Image (cartoon, rainbow, N blue to C red; front, side, top):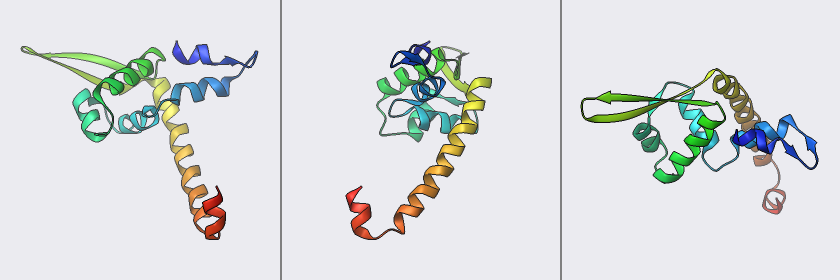
Length: 123
């Protein structure tokens, strides 16, 4: 698993690094957020994140699948083959953490916006 390899860094095992490794990547947290509400086809995910290149989206989804966060189901509709992606049980539990991180980030950013301008600019 991709994230499991990242859980041993600095000469020690770190479960936090494993969690952060799963979400590392420019689009993974956004992909998890999109799948929190319902399973989506690849095209639906791409349309919801238009600035993410299709190749990058495919690679990020493959890594999330390898880590057991996303499940991919292939659907055959006549000659058309579509893939539907959904969160696994582990993915759903990770979504809880992502929601908490989002709430923390909003609180943090709202505190920053109340600081004097020069403090925010220095950051």
